[in-house]
Image (cartoon, rainbow, N blue to C red; front, side, top):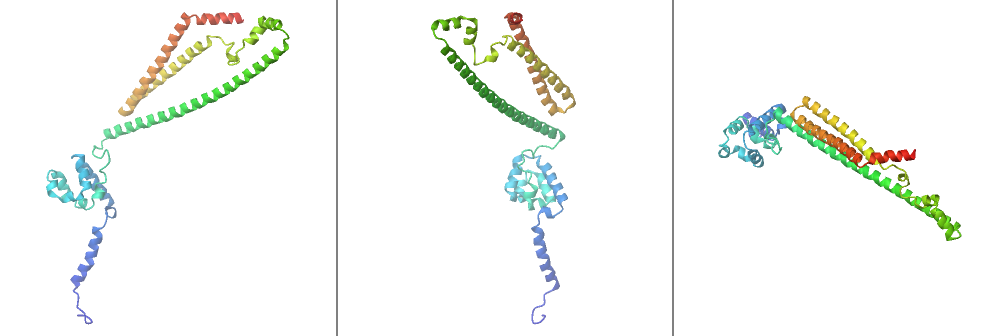
Length: 289
C-alpha cells in the first residue's frame, strides 16, 4: 500500500498499458498497415477466387462471417488454406473483397483478354463518334436546307409580285381588246406572258445538265471510297486482331459502297445514252450557238 492505497504490481500496469494498444491495432484499417503487402494479398485473393464461381465472391462479400465458417468453406480447401495463412482477410473483408462487383473480376487478366477489351472499347468509341458526327452533319444539312428554302421562297414571292405589277400596268395601257390580242400573239408578248417566276434560273438550263453532273459526282465519290477501302485493308495488316477486324469491316464497306457508286454512274450513263439525252443536249447547244 502506498499512501494508504493498494500497491499495484508492475505486471498489472504493463497489462493495462498493452490492452488499449491491442484495441487500437484491432481497429486499424489496411491502409494504416503495409499498403504494398495488403495490395499483394488482395491480388493473390483475386487470382484465387477466379478458380471458383463468381457467386462465391458475392456471397462472401455480403456475409463476411462465412469466412470464419469452416463448414461453409469445406468445399473450397484452397481458399480455406489461404485464409488460415492470411487472417487479415476475414478481419477486413470490405477491403480485400472490393474487387467483387466488377464485371470482369473473375476473368483472367491475360494480354489476350486485355487486347480484346481494348478492341471492344475502340469499336464503341468509333461508333459513338460516327453517330455524333452523323447527327451534327444531319442537323447542319437540315438547317442549311431550311435557310435555302426560305430564301428561295422569298425570292419567288418577290418575283411574282414584280411580274403581277408589270402585267397590271401593261393591261392598263391597252385601250381595246384588239390591241391586247395583238400584243399577246406577238413573240415578245408570248415570251413575256409565259415567263416562270417560280424558277427563272431554270428556264434556260439544258435538260442534260442534271444527269451528267450526277454521273460525274458518282464516279468521283466511288473512286474516293474505293481508295479509302484499299487504304484501310492495307493498314489492317499492321494491327492486332481486334483493330484488324474493325478495319476489315470498314475497308470492305468502303469498297462495296465505292463500287456501288461507280456501277450506278455506269448505269446512268448507259440509260442517258439510250434515252437520247446527250444527243438532245448537243442539239440544244447547236441551236443556241
